[in-house]
Image 1 (cartoon, rainbow, N blue to C red):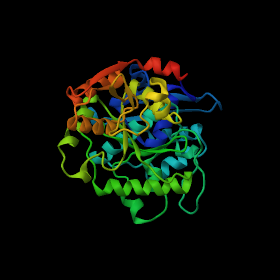
Image 2: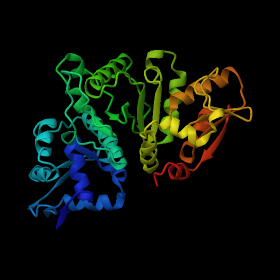
Image 3: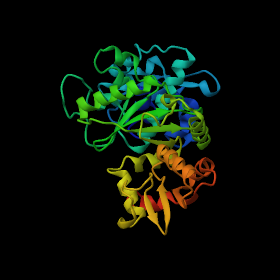
Image 4: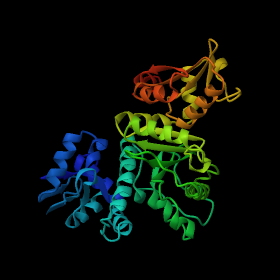
Length: 377
């Protein structure tokens, strides 16, 4: 017998599939202990008695389907198991059937890839503790100015953003954006490049940003968005993206041309912890106050972008993973060889060193020390 309850592996799988429709088998590690989740998936692909720990309801069925091979292997709910969604929430099954065309999924690889990119972003947000289920959040609208979105950290998948209103822009935008994080009266556009170099859609991304600003204005009283979260499978993916961006002479295709701040979050346990830091209220100020004395902090008054001036050295904090600031810092150092330093976490050091190529020294700090000081552990 398999128990479905909040926080259990089976319960977590059912909850995330109620939102994303299908989940990549290769990314089960993002949900927690990979070996345990694989064992749970294997059990749920066989006929079992499924028990609702809260209500006492019980059904006997196969819960999951596995299809595809390699990186395209995907996990979906079995049709007979759909009543389980109502165990999660009274609105879960209706929302699922509406989002996924009455449980019909295109077999096209592009559709599967996009669903997987959204699913990984949702998994990271779920692990961090955000509410990510649309049926548990206020429904977005574009009729009047309202403060609907709660003043805590939540994630709206791109499907929710696309379905606000009925104009043509909402039908065609958000092709690469996988969702949006709202946190303490700030909005982050969310992207997931997975294991390949991030490719921007030029003017399309610009239009998507302005659609998101309109959604944020109508539902959260947020009138500007300058930040994005970029998920990726490894620092090599980010380094390749940074190098490709460096070589791109067309401004509209540079990923730092639309968002002033882009925070790179690896798709792993370190990424979950980094996401928690980024979503703190006034995160950048909090991290700078932790690192530097107030009289050494630049406060944006320098000749170029850096965070502090200490012992005649210009210092940039990369603890928030903001790669656009790293790009601007490097460009300043290429023009003037200032004595400089970048502070980062150990899992960021390889790509920071490789990207800066000796232009600055790199100082590593333990994430657990920062988390302890901020009361996160």
